[in-house]
Image (cartoon, rainbow, N blue to C red):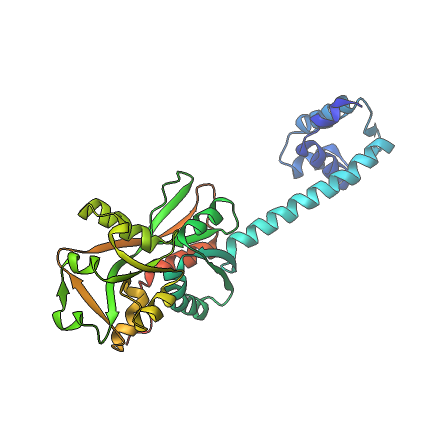
Length: 311
């Protein structure tokens, strides 16, 4: 097989199409903003690469050889495909709509994102969000293996392949049933907490990891020092267990906002004890945010938790 076929350029193919449509070298050169010698050179290079004659030249004009007709048909298809690609890319750049595939850990997906998604839908009904709920570790894995485009988690990832942008602040609160004996005290010592039945989030949860790191780094206390009576897989399950009297727990204030307002649960302060963190938007470094993603991210940053729906 003649290896010269690989050396044919798109400009040479476009030159051939213009020559056929304009029926003269001078008119084709003018249309392509080339000099006539430059256009002629394109045709000659194509013929040299293929080692066949493509265009018949005569005093009466130009015509295609059988080989030239084959190339002309292919060239028209290539130029048409290029125009289609250009149009699709232009439409993508101009449109603000589209589908976004996202994963988020339990707290943002359950207590923060629903209100933001509702506000987004009112302002941009052409943007659709497909949201999956997993623990923070799994969300990071889904972003890394491109199962989703973006994620939202309660800890900053260490993997250098992931970009992390801070979104919202969070605080972990010690919550007890409204009738618990600590309610009268209002504040306890850490030693009191270590003697009480404690309900823990499952491994992989950012809430658990943040609490564990805080105890270890600030109090030199391993997580095992807590009197753990059970591990549950969601904040909702833990709230129900606390309400049922199984034990106490430390949860995001976003997760217990409704129960604290209705006084089903009570928040107890711990002396010299404050656990805060941030939620992060994460995505892979090569990922380029399209207009729909940019609008969505601006909504995430514009509406901090609790701001939507306030009068």
